[in-house]
Image (cartoon, rainbow, N blue to C red; front, side, top):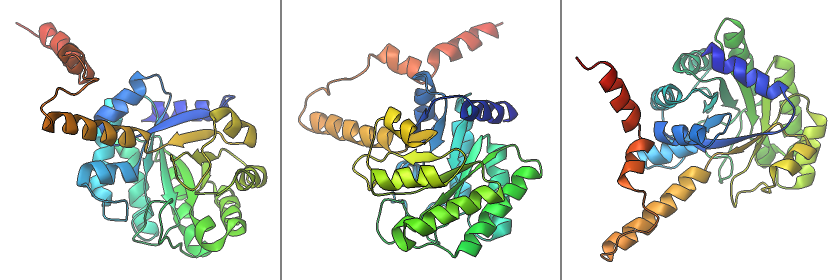
Length: 285
């Protein structure tokens, strides 16, 4: 855990923007690392969809997320960000959530200012807590970090959609003052809004690149020029996976073999059979 947190700090301090794909289980996390990415993100939306078959509307629990995160972090060696939703309650709940994510192996946890039940930041019906309660959550998260939990804190606000850009920027500034390592202003609706956020808030900032969402999806170089340090693509793998599975099911229903199917040896390699065989041989007697 300490090694991945240290590595994340190094990545944030180094020049250039970092591209961070989202994942929803141990296998998708392994694919992110296999593809050469330096960090990954456990998306609450993706985990809720893949694990429960339910929308990201606060239906998934702390226990389910941290268990999924434990499997994800155990499968890779790159730093992983974990979606910690609202922290699941008051300051003591936030403290426990941060501690649980740190012990699961996450290098960073995201805590947001939505009211429960929270929901995906690019969907309707969002509401946020007061600025004071939002500050309480981040203060509790920072205190847990400072008390010895080796994890970074990413503070997210969804205030743009509810209270406007000015309040969202003010909250991000406050989160930085409270000690958040990274800020995340969710769902700005134009390049100008993205530029204002990056200009008026210090420290590392994350851009959320959801295909066909509320925020313009820009190339990484443009995001870096605006002032972002991280570009997260939280739903790309889930999106592509659902499309591929639907296409394969159509083929099967029509009595055809789906195209773009891996050779069985490649499939076995993807889930780790060669390494298992090597280890099995090592301990053979």
